[in-house]
Structure formats: C-alpha cells, structure tokens
Image (cartoon, rainbow, N blue to C red; front, side):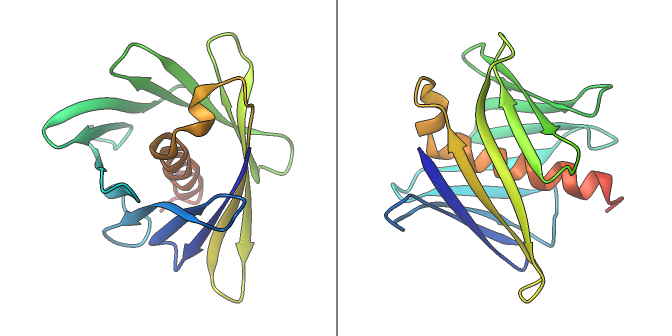
Amino acid sequence: MNYTVKGTHNKHFELFNDKNESLGKLDYTSWFSTKSAIMLASGHSYEIASSGVFQTSIDITSGDTEVGSLKFNWKGNIIISLAGGKSYIFKRVGFINSRFGLFTDAEHEAIILRQNFKLSELSFSYTIETDDNYPEGKDISFLLLLIYCANYMHSMSAGM
C-alpha cells in the first residue's frame, strides 16, 4: 500500500491514503521537539516523550499505559520495542539518506519511507510504501510513529 504524509512547518504531519483521505496526525509541541502526540481519525491517541537523560530513550503511551519504546543503538538506528514483545529496526537506507526502512527481526524491509523537503513551505513530506505481507503497514498509528522516527533521526543528525 502507498501513503503520503504532508508536513506543515515541521510541527504537524498528516497521513493520507491513496484516496487522499486523512487517516491521522502527528503533532509536535514545538519545532522538532521530542514530545509529540499521534491522533487517529478514530479518536484514539498516543503520546510520545523522551525519558532518558540524553534523549536516547523515548516512551510511547496511550493514556496511562506504556505501549512501546524507542531507543538508539550504537549504529545510529532506532530500535522500536512494542508492548506485545515485537521489535523492529528503523534505519537510514542508501547513500543519500533521504530514505528510511523498517526492518523485521528477519531483516526483511517491511516499510519504506522517502523524505522530501519542500523549500517553499520549509517542511518535510514523506511517501510510504508498505509490504502487504506485514500487518504493520496497515497500522496507522505505527506508520505515524515511523514518521516520528524519521524526524527524530533527522533532527539528531542535524544537531537540533
């Protein structure tokens, strides 16, 4: 499946399906802050906030329940750990670094994100391609979490 994400001033990101229907949003409290919220069209929401001293550990909660975490490893990749025990590796792929991939435990690339910068709007947008054999590619909250990961990696590499 294919999705697009439109960013506004790098604070608000909205996910659209191939029919241009809004599926959910990722909103930051300030420009590329580590604190943000995912809001789905269904009304369900998640909060994302750093918990480590050096902001290398990030908690994902829904209400008062922790549903996952993000951590940088020594290779500069993000390890996504979900409450159900699943884990993934999110990393930059390729030479130009505008492409990101989500890899399963078996090192299969299940989701591809391509980052585009719109100079006229001073904001990033994304295209997302998912492998239909993986349910993660149909999970809107998970896709928005990947946008958070891409933005986080970008801001960390830019020294923000």
